[in-house]
Image 1 (cartoon, each protein chain N blue to C red):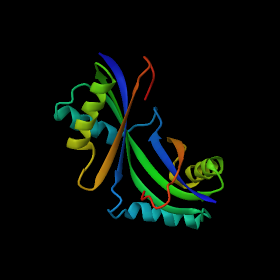
Image 2: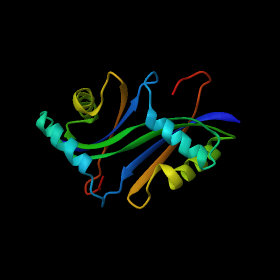
Image 3: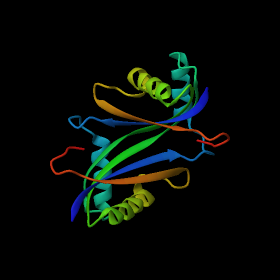
Length: 90
Length: 90
């Protein structure tokens, strides 16, 4: 068993309203960032877990997304896995 | 000018308390994911913007992080930039 870092991104699906994204868009325009066209706000979750290998870690992370981390009705998720160096802080 | 997608990740710094991460950790343990050691919860922000090139887009996104998207006292951020295909939805 070795330690893995799963980097999970959860973002609202394109057809779903995102009032938080609209608020950030307005804020950026008010600050002078007029080149911004669209903003979508989601969650980022770093999960440190034990697994036999990267594939097992990824499979378990997808299970976590399906059961707790994402609402798959309105959100999509992406999972990336990388090895953790011993002693490194997340 | 062309269209770029900035993928911004904002995460609490290692020394900062993350009660949301602790709550997710407890939830994952309660659901049987006992291999999880640590969870940190942050934000993911997709920003679609016009820029002359990837470097300009990245520089502007870093300015947005410094002024609005992240609280750099307690959060760190990462920016990735990729070109947007015409007609693609974020």
